[in-house]
Amino acid sequence: MMDRMKVVIFGASGMVGQGVLRECLADADIEQVLCVVRQAIGQRDAKLRELVLTDFLDFTAVEAELSGYDACFFCLGVSSAGMTEAQYKHATYDITIAAATTLARLNPGMVFEYVSGMGTDSSEKGRIMWARVKGRTENALLALPFKSAYMFRAGFIQPLHGIKSKTRFYRLFYAVTMPLLPVLRAFFPHQVTTTEELGRAMIRVAKKGYGKNVLEMRDINNND
Image (tube, rainbow, N blue to C red):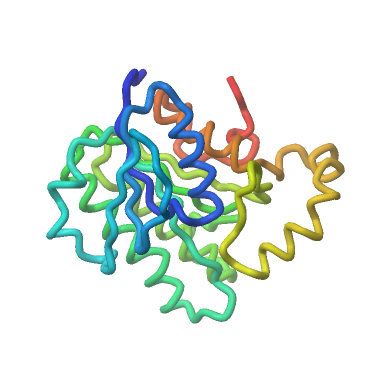
């Protein structure tokens, strides 16, 4: 079990990443947080650093700043809506694996955690495009020489603490469905989580490990 940790977050400006960042800053065992972003998020905290990059496929120039970390929470992701498979693969697989390959080489003792999605296709052969690409990404991550790697297959995620999605459609969707969430949670307890629960689950697994490498919603909401 890890005690004090230094962590890297990719995607800290997105809804999931905001939630993970919030929980990392609140956790006394995390002493440093590095957010790798395309644009500064503008948040201030004594243990928070930002690394602003334009190219997420080549980390050669910043390798020194990516060394010495215990865990990476990879929350960067996009919707597949309107994308071809090649476009979605570039945004999902190519960028994730470029970052992970670099981090695995620089930090062989690192725990790498990837926010995937419920319904991801590990066979990489199914009919649903996004699920195939996510499955390919998961499989490639699990093959890298990290200390350990975990895939978090999140389903419906309720944003808490004023956190909002950057995507207008999702903001409208959450505004409409928010009153129904208590009902959804009551009837489908293993299909709904929150940004807070997901963030805490990722930190908990980084500290203690978990019995399997692919976590479904039941595992994410398991507080043991």
